[in-house]
Length: 97
Image 1 (spheres, rainbow, N blue to C red):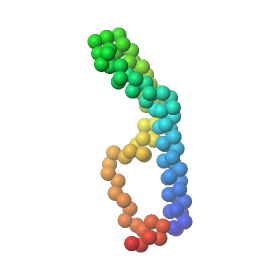
Image 2 (cartoon, one colour):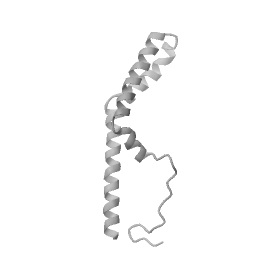
Image 3 (cartoon, one colour):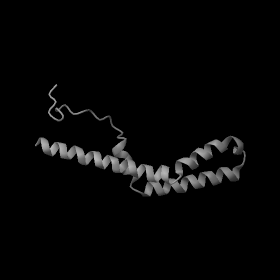
């Protein structure tokens, strides 16, 4: 049974790695993070320009809609659980301390 537990842990680590890669692809590699940083930096100079603010909001909303339509929200729920997860009380890999 301990072998199955180890295998299950490996699968979970691989799954988490896949979720992290999905986040990197959707948020970082897509340029979304860079765009949001640029928008935030440009806000002080454009806070009274409604056209630019509307354009920023529209671009951000479009990208967020693509993210929400993807697998990323589910992946994030695995990476960042909302409930506090209690560590297992069982020994891990034969450690009985």
